Amino acid sequence: MADEIVQGLDAAIGARRDIRRFRPDPVPGEYVEKVLTAGHSAPSVGHSQPWRFIVVTHPGLRDRAAHMADRERIRQASGMTPDRAARLLDLKLEGIREAPLGVVVACDRRAAAAGVLGRATFPDTDLWSCACAIENMWLTARTLGLGMGWVTLFEPGELAELLGLPDGVETLGWLCLGWPDERPPEPGLARAAWSRRLPLDQVVMRDGWQEHAPPDSHVRGPAAEKLVTATDSADAVLTPPDALGVLDRAVTRVSALTGSRVRGGSLILAGADHPVVGRGVSAFEQSVTRDVLTAAVEGRSAGAVAARAAGLEVVVVDAGVAGGAVPGALDARVAGPTGDLVATPAMSPDSVEALLDRGRAIGESAAATGIVALGEVGIGNTTVAGSLACALLGLRPSEVAGLGVGADDAIVARKRQVMSQALARAGSVREPMALLAELGGPEIAVLTGVALGAAAAGSPVVLDGLATSVAAALAIRMEAGVQAYLIAGQQSREMAHGALLADLGLEPLLQLRLRAGEGVGACLATSLLLQGTAIRAGTARTVD
Image 1 (cartoon, one colour):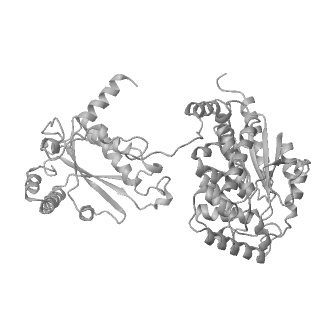
Image 2 (tube, rainbow, N blue to C red; image 1 turned 120 degrees about the horizontal axis):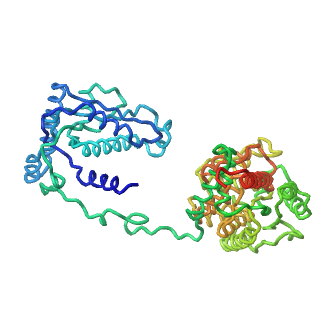
Image 3 (cartoon, rainbow, N blue to C red; image 1 turned 90 degrees about the horizontal axis):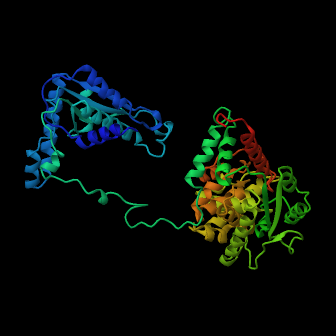
């Protein structure tokens, strides 16, 4: 930007004053239009443009407004100490009658906040948008040699009635606009010793309020230059913007994390058994966990076949299968009791810590192969994962436990009862490691560690179903930077999975109503990611 533009803006900001004294000379219509156009060019939340500009020249309206302002000035003074009241009454706080025209900025708030992008979380952003419009008008008036004064000595409802505003439209006060009859070198209230401008260093804080200490972080998101480079690279591909839809953004995330075309990766398939099965929460025998992990070691489980089809290595992890270690699986088992959630905690704190450490090591090692996809096996672990989801998100068991594979109404009722009892026993525990100890499962603890380790090593992590997403949610609560490395492979049929993905801030690549588990959805999504990176790398570019 040219130096003269910067200097001009600095001069306008530095010389802007709240003008109270005006000359009676009329303001040319083209100047009024410039000021209003500047207000209409302000940023607005969701491009809602909530401002409405009421230009007031009618003498009767101005007289009524001036009377209202005088009355409010007296009322405010009556609530002050005698000295402060006298000083207030000595101040000239408005020029409603003297200025050749007034502009009332009104905010049309009749649109529901949830229906305007950006207002659902900050409902008052429509008012903030109108304040931005006023600042635009003020600076533009200054550059034209005009003066502006912002008068708020009104009861808002009374001013709205004066101007006939409908319900749901609020005023932000009255702007006096005209040729200034004063050139104050500093703000009027500062000259009157009413207040002073604080030094900049008294209003600027770093990383929080005053002595607030930001949380420690050992996992950092990708550097800004990597994100920008990946986005620039996507922009240069000879395709329409976002040609691959949701996949495009995921490919950009992978590119930012890997820095080059990624060619493969690993499926980490962790399995464990759960004593909660003894409470009738599953239609399958506990032995199925061992059967699936054994088939995975042999390369014949659905997850292993899906991984091989996607070009991924398979790491089968025995995190605690009943009946001894699974031959050929990576042994991540830890000693220590496991409980059924209802009567006793799931694991000891020491067991949780050991499982997390083993998961971290697995994740760091797998990151060297490329993308890390997560999968799990464990009869009864939907009850475990559902209990954790309830505790993490404040959900009710009825919002989490639905008909699973082979389940009937009686099983669903027992799952909800078990989850309610487990949550009642765990109480208000929310710290992630404590939650794992109270309500978790060994494979979920391992996968939480895998997500932490893979992210720390800079690898994208692709999630599968509810249990892997619960592990990711726990990992984020331990290290916020992990979120930058996560990709939602799919949204499963589990009732709570959508809410959990929303909590993670992730949009799934696939919605196939899968029930397979074992990381099948993560492998399918990883295959898409690898194809997407190949498409981006091989497609012609607008600039070679």
